[in-house]
Length: 345
Image (cartoon, rainbow, N blue to C red):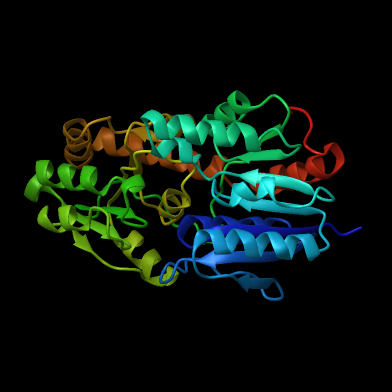
């Protein structure tokens, strides 16, 4: 019997869209369908032909209500919820199918104080229902296990997208000193941190942000960072192949696909020192702008440092292959259907 999987995403674009496209490509043996609220201008991946996509645009509450109505009327084996806000549907959808939930970085990571306590309480309540949490990093798995002892928790890290050509890893910079970040300009991705690093490094390197957004945009421009705006995947690939170092400055994270795309383009990657990125094996560039700036300067000045970063990045793209992800994802879906999400794995 062919499993029918309905993916639901309230923030469809950027890394979430790329991840869903990768999940579908990795499990062609299943029938997939999408219910999404799209982010305009952030189309980052092509969904395979024949996959039905229903867009429900507008406010979040309206999207959740509309998605819930569709799921009550739909026939499915698995509903796969992507992101914490789509995860609210765990309280609203029928119990006839299995629930798979991928936070793509828990919302609790983005807030502090009383807001974190409220988000944590909401996640704990929603996690009481039988489900399989498909975590994308060891950090996310630990958070899931802290929230509930009733759900199955499976770690399926993101992978270099299937079919993406693997370019030779840069053995060192190619005469230029281009440092790039990739993604939406928003608080999560740390644009003000990136801007601070750019100011500290000064004219010793050129800093470029591939993407667009509002939160932190002015700080980037004030620091002399070039902002490319949203570009088609093939144009982004060209930018990556022409760059010398990818610097990921996110303040909180799940398992970013942008850095894997950079690695696939042969671009060495270093990351701000946060727990999720360390757990995934990325080179820790430091936890404050001065430390990260020193790492960037050392990368361009010291051949042994460049080789160390290149080797670590090469290991990442070997570890997070599309084949490994496909095997783990297929097993997670089968576990969700057979177990009902009632125990840890």
